[in-house]
Amino acid sequence: MSFHFGGTSGNILADRRYDMALGLAENGELQAAADLLADSLAHAPSWPPIHFHLGDMYRRLGRAEEAEIALRRYLALDPADHMGAGVKLSLMGLAAPDTAMSAAYVQSLFDQYAPYFESALVGKLAYKIPEFLADAIFSAAEPGARFSRALDLGCGTGLAVAALAGHIGAADGVDIAPAMVEEARRKKLYARLETAEITDFLSRTQDSAYDLVLAADVFVYVGPLEDIFGEVARVLSPGGLFAFSVQSADETGAPWMLGEDHRYAHTLAYLNACTAAAGLLPVSATPCTLRQNAGHPVSGHLLVLRKG
Image (cartoon, rainbow, N blue to C red):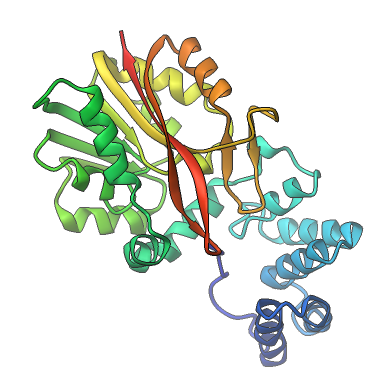
């Protein structure tokens, strides 16, 4: 997924060059795209997307110094970073990976994606994490178990709760993207829905409020997980389950990393450390294919933890 800044620059010459440049980039003509974007700056020097895409073209061309200049000019015009310049800078080793993915970027990404989220993810990318996660939960729980209160972190359009239909008494959902929350609201699966950051929502939640917490394909947008694990442990009731998916990282490398696919991956060793620090107990860790990316399977794990 990539986010496209809304609106136009207000200058027709700049807009034409910008559109042509993005088309060239899609065809792999990066130098031609960069030349057009640089030319368009003469007509619309204050429009953030031109600086962003110019920086990304230079990055992909290996022109690191010029890429950094363009991306930082973009950030000066859009400090909230709706387009993800922080991610690009992090991939170049010029920004801290733990703060690279801004809230504005994630929200904008999924607000844009919301209308066709399910058709694209499920229909085109073979996404089955909600069903896989439900199977892992059923395997961990007592036969015929029913969860009286569940929390769906990064609920999206409600796919995870839908996969557990009939096994949840009431579900609350939280997502950073308002458009995704509205899509979920239409399904009438949730007792409560809120637009918020996960850590903010958890910090305002009372102790032992839920006997099931879900996070389906959410932690690919979060680097360090210690704080979230600690908060989840607090809001879980004794015996409650925490079920989530992660993208797999090389166990011999960093505990977690931000990849070229603009997603975070985590090692099992790191997740085990977070689990122990939060006082949770490991139940299962199942390898799986999260989705397809450019025709290739993306490896991950489904984990289920229990509060003792």
